Image (tube, rainbow, N blue to C red; front, side, top):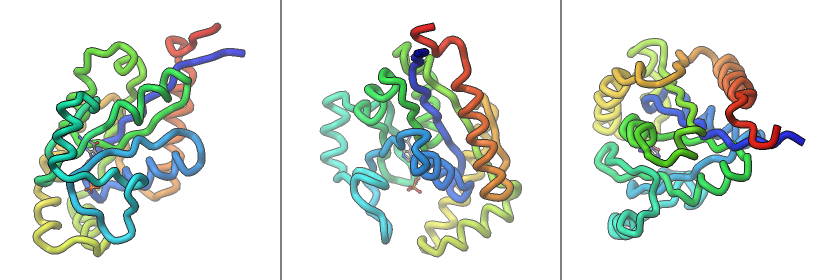
Length: 200
Ligand code: 5GP
């Protein structure tokens, strides 16, 4: 039986691009494990600790930074966010694909990471909305954030979108189904790479 190493499917894009929905669906359908990040931001209504995020105090987060527990971490919208090694490393060695939803700064850090198993596993995708008007409509429509938070996210989104060219793949979002089909097609193709085969 052919064995292969797991893929790290790193997905970035502005809030409202639909990337979290794509990543979650992939995990819900059993195609990949979702890397649950740590954050110091407060939980939104309905979010569960350990599922949506590991919600930490800044002090706890900083302790984990000092203990070298993160692959990457970054300050986003005035809060810390980070990916734990424990959410990723064992899975890729075991041949399980991992999907992670992280910002452009985190992606820069993962891309420049010295660890060969991470570099070889990495597949990067940037998801973006078709227009700024569509992005604003999606951010407003979600109804979970106050106006000043939406304005901050809009400003950050426009800056964030300028980084798309650093990614190997870009998806301009259309309908949920079309986006998901493209997303899965990307994963299927990446699974066929000969460089991932460990036991030919
Ligand atoms: P939200 O607060 O809306 O859940 O996420 C805000 C931003 O933080 C999003 O762009 C999301 O991709 C990013 N993010 C979530 N987890 C991580 C992480 O572990 N590391 C980094 N660098 N960014 C993250």
